[in-house]
Image (cartoon, protein in one colour):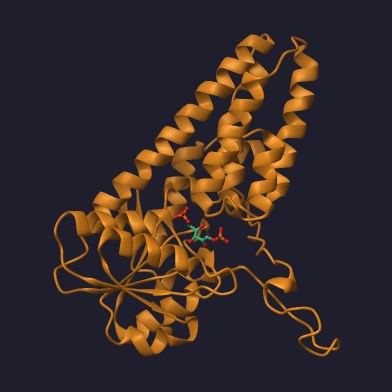
Length: 308
Ligand code: RUB
């Protein structure tokens, strides 16, 4: 898919989930570079900027997309000509996509060790990474049950239960408001991440924080399954994560409620670090308190000299 097609598919949620949109963004930029016919350096950089903007605007609050796009264009300004820029973008995109896919697999292997025979697991929305953990444990022969939330309004839970059932896993769909009631039976919760802040808070599908609170109350373990490129570098410098709000038509049909009633449709919520038992990443299991050190190590400590 080219840049415009990819951006449209991200906006209308044909491509969704933090990892998939990041990989799609990298792939679209690789396609942009591969099909570029000019050889003027300045024009290329200006067209690249437009392509980046189109992608970033397609889901403007998505940190994974921002990180995927920036990883793909890293070093381009230092290239001497358009040919070199094209090769660099293509190889950066390939490295990002390969690392991202490998991280999903590795997190699956690490997280699967937390699941035992007889466990009851809960998950929410449709996270490729959380599902990688659950599927890996099942493929290892473990016997457990999964409860998955419907995840209104987009009902990504339908995708999740379909994937789990196709795998042969004992799966039960619940409505979002059944979380606290069902949590009494649950041993572990595995959720994905849209974004993780430098102080270890999780931003994920609306309703995730109520799973965390209910898990805490019921003494179930609450695990976040996240590649480290979902860590938000901007939060190191105090920026807040903007929570995406989507159209009210996702919740109510036109004319269904009085016109004076306001509708609020936030897509994600924030779970404080204190409710998270561990973050399972491709660098291993870590506490939310370790996120700061990992981010600084990945960015290099000179990052502060550049900003301050
Ligand atoms: C998806 C969602 C997922 C994370 C992680 O929200 O909140 O839990 O993005 O997904 P949406 P993954 O459907 O609004 O994109 O583990 O697949 O990256």
